[in-house]
Image 1: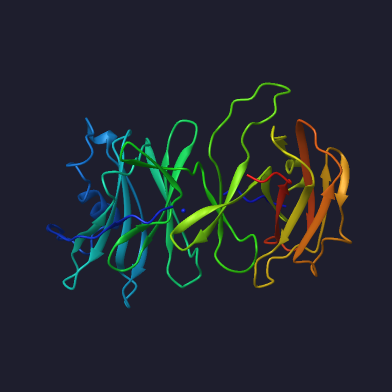
Image 2: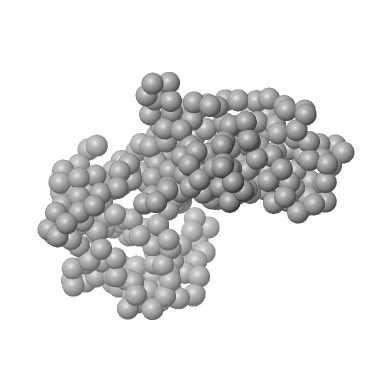
Length: 318
């Protein structure tokens, strides 16, 4: 069995063309093209080692060459995002970049692509990685401008993402993918309850908006040894019953389902193969109680690419 690593905002718009920034080597390594557009007018590295860039290809030409590239940059402290677009002659220009009001802080960056709204176009989660966590920005390219879908807060004219280490999940098998992320990281001692839940965000008219708080989310795959499948989660101070274990089996097309699973919480079996097998898409179980620190394990059978997502939810309205 194997586990899934556990994975957005008012709309911000900026569209412009910087015609004097052109990469003249269309066949060069794409990383070198991205590096060529490092925004020295916005970031201030003191040496070459502090210049960091990451990218993903959003669109390709009919010949499968990169047509639109989303690039992120840092100087090991602050960050920037640019959209690079291939022109008719095969060179690249800067087609858009983030507004200066966005707070993009991190030592380095990472970009993951998802078709979040299932319209055939890729959206991106851009991570700016810090020492203890990463802030995430959910961004879309609509063909003319860079749009932020990130839940955020405004303070002093600056906009900060509410998402720490966000991950996209298909929790409903219908509609857009959800994004799950905590708002705060906590350092807890023995016996301490958590103060903050994780939050599930759903896609609304203007971007991702908070849907509900949850106590835990985790994934398990059939090709991971069950002895390595134990996860711990803390009770949250404001949590009230009913506490519910909810399981999503496989993907929305019915593929990648497990054929059986036994889920154990605090050494008590709470769900077995009779409730969770290849015929099951969703399963729920009301939990009698939770402790300050809870331990959940899953023994999963089925094809190696079979997986389940497990959520622990409560009755608190947040």
